[in-house]
Length: 432
Image (cartoon, rainbow, N blue to C red; front, side, top):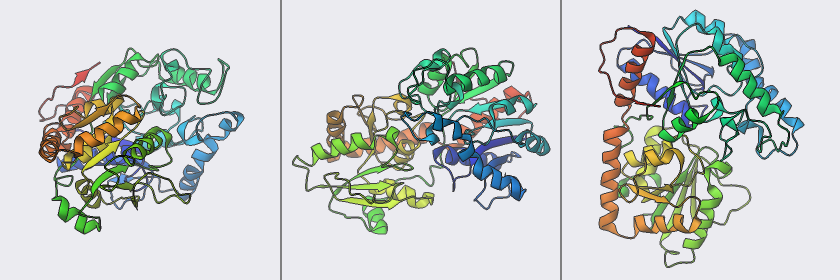
């Protein structure tokens, strides 16, 4: 029986979507009687199958590592983004020896770019590696999302996010370290969306790699439709309003999540006949100290770790808005559809695999606030059409987004990569 080790910087209580996705896969592998373990940098969850360093000194170092890792960024005073959006991974650590002690048959890397695993450490693992990408970091010179920049197709340098005009800069240094460290590694790449797979295939680092597409899965017995009236009663939300939902980690401050675009779209709606009919729900962010004019009353629910509550939040809304500029996948969109709530997004990146235009939601013209507003209205204005969108949303989740389907696809891939005979069904994967 195969023994996989899933590696992610955080567990679900300390991380974002990648942590939730990785842990869900780990739990489902355990349910299938697979001897799965999960190695993380910062353990907060009470689960004996999730391990981190037992060494207290190592834990202190790990907590300081992201800060120290980001120190070279201080040389770039004109950088466009905060340090957490650019990862250098240059400090050594002992993670390779820790992995060796766990004796896995195969290593499934997930989101590791928070100082957890140095670039050079991968060559020391001496085990087959399946790397699940959750953003673009692995094939860029350090940015987690390129935001339209295509320098990763060559060798990075002159990085716009660093505010650099020099071909030899930190992004080129990181890119060259990756090239040198990984050139002889046989990595199997998994992307959760066709968009991310295409980006990886176009990169100079992974143009010749084996790249598969496996969408993230979720437990559709948790993320399920609940009668809107019941969900709103449990959450103390109004029954007589059209409720628009928006949510992400640091939902109102993360530029990539498109809050400013949503704000413009909502202000347009507030000037229409809908001004007294709509209210907004925001999760993943508390109410900002400086008031933000969104044109409507806002219910801020803060960070939500409980999945049952999160499912109720999705079910309480008439429509979920995911106005992201770039998404490797779009986990909140997937969760919303599973709860029977249509999604409005831009016709962009990973969300195109999830949202079917005018079937389970609406894909607005890229970054048009006017069309985003149009999409919101189109979803909610007709009750009969809205119900059809809700029904198709749940149907899509049942067909494509179950955690069972994802786990079996990974097991088939693990069998192929590790050459271990498993009694699992082989599921067809898209290969790039």
